[in-house]
Image (cartoon, rainbow, N blue to C red; front, side, top):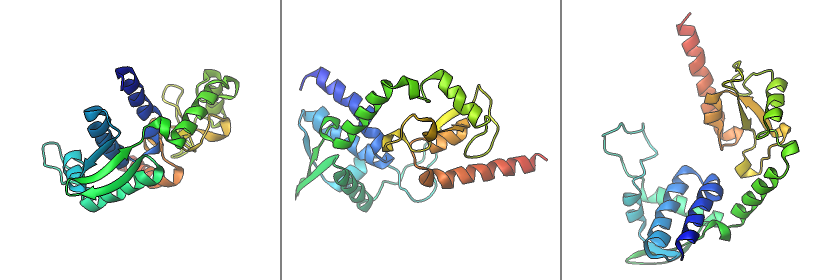
Amino acid sequence: MKEEELIQICKDISDYLAPLQAPYEQAIYHYLFRWSYLESGSNTVRKGKRTIAAECGLPSQRGPSPRVGVGKAKISYAVIDEYIRSLEKKGHVKIGDTTREGTLYTILIPSQIKACLELRDRRLKSKNISDIDYFNNPENRIKIFERDNYICHYCGQKVKEGNATLDHFIPTSRGGDNSKENLVTSCLECNSIKSGKSYEEAAPALLERMKERLRRQNSNQ
């Protein structure tokens, strides 16, 4: 495979595949990609799940996040298996036979994954419809802020033009577009929490953020 082709694949993974994956799925996919395409130029690699668990360096999902400088507990074999099967279900990898050397994985790239091609086409289409694009068009962005009275849709905080952001209620990675119906005014912190997630997925963290803001306000009174 030529260097130019490999560079384009890496770009496509970042642009069209990563938005479709959960963080742990991204880490495992990148690990398999590194030991296939980047190591041997092949689309397959044979690895044991315990090796993946050890070499990915993923922290355990249980307990508080480790402090800097403190050893991280490795993610379990069972969780590695769960996320690999999730990647297979999404059509991002194929699971083959298992030997003493490990399981054979075939790694698919964005040009071979239907969901990636659909996401690419949606983005290209969106770029060609600037007149109804309320996310990238500066004049249309102002219209959304004015419609929402410069109030964050999630926490109700008043924002200013300098720190107001727009959030896709349905993320673009899940079929959302740049229409005014799918965009809401958001403060920077809520946008960071909500980014890439559905409202249902982000709701617990958004609620905790509002509780923390109220606690700070009460403590300052």
